[in-house]
Length: 233
Image (cartoon, rainbow, N blue to C red; front, side):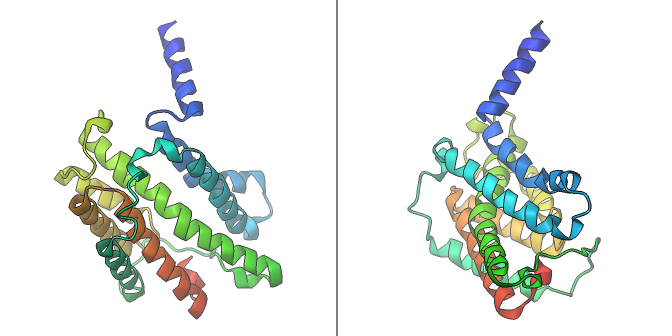
């Protein structure tokens, strides 16, 4: 009976997105929607990357907007245009393009998000979707999960009692490796994670990390569109 009650309470928390589920539920959708699309639409493999990215952007974006008041760490908007964060974003962008082709890749990717494979309105829509997803959605969900929730949970299961920006070597190392190797281009990913961690420790606030992440993604987006370097996506 106790087990059933606990399971029922856990399900209520998940669907209500209470506690750490406000981070994990949207992030799970963010991570696994591609797999769901692949299973749901067999035979349309060449379109999976576009469908899944569009759905991920819309669904996670809407969830973040609906849950925005629960993320109290986002309340301080004064650091939204923090100069250190903006400079960090520029440096991260330079790392991504500067290291291209200069380190080994452990996997290969045959599919790329290339809107120019289509024509007209579809191309414009996909470019716009990529902008929204990479500049507005990804930085928010990834920073909330990695540098607001998970980095504190590694320090203590009572993560809400851990101040944002508290340093421990273990949490720094784990987040750096998780974030870094979750990216196909792992070396820039590791360097980016370390830089954003250091920014978090300096500012004691998650907002500058989102700003730096968004700035780097914005510059990469502009670079990709301007040069046609869609292999980054």
